[in-house]
Length: 360
Image (cartoon, rainbow, N blue to C red; front, side, top):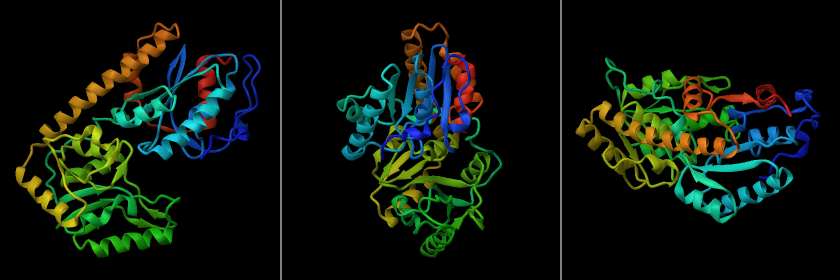
């Protein structure tokens, strides 16, 4: 995958006159303006916009320096993906050499790979942006499921490893790039046929299935004893932290990528990718009756540590560019307003950044 083609970028701006934002191609990505002066933008690499917000913002500002903090979405745990990202990144940075680019990875091994390929990479697991006030234990809700697996219905998620669990909740969604509606419905039916104790929490619809809101997902967690992480490879795997914030211990299989950043030997059980082993581990964790607040507190301790490191990292960027703002204040505000993980049309984000930073 190469970086976004030139025609996705808006016409060059002159002075403080606003460019034609409508010329930016359609599509959204996660993006956040971390600081306006000096300007620092957080974004995610992606499919449509190869370098997320940087694909749109960097060409807009030809006479003003921006710092782009870019999260390597998914996993760059293998050499092929790391080389592909580094190749595209170096080409993009050469075109926009007056800007600064910093790369965030979910695990130390990924950081080392990107550094070896000449990128300024740092380990900051993206789960530090999760809202702990949304995912939390709920009292007065009795568990009805032995386990819950929040994942796409996909071969790479290995949903079938939950087939031997007595009562298991599946939270799913349809990825249009993987399934059309008919194929998704067929995959859901096949999964439930293989897992007699399974229940798809999402109601099937004409366009796939009804997606649950975060509070609805948290209620399913409250009705479950254990969270499942069964894929062999992941990025940050957000749901692994959601489970723990909701107080669920985890049964997982060995995995490459950033999921293990939040692995806790006190509350996780790692088993081979075998359905009987998974079911046995679920029963063993249930029998331990770990208090939900205990599981949550351990996860929160790691998240707070990660947040402190991230705030300090961004503060060094602000200081290095001559700024005087305190990022800890801005961090709390962005977290409270869900700005870190919001998906926004890139043309709207470009307009927002242009106005917040005063243009060129």
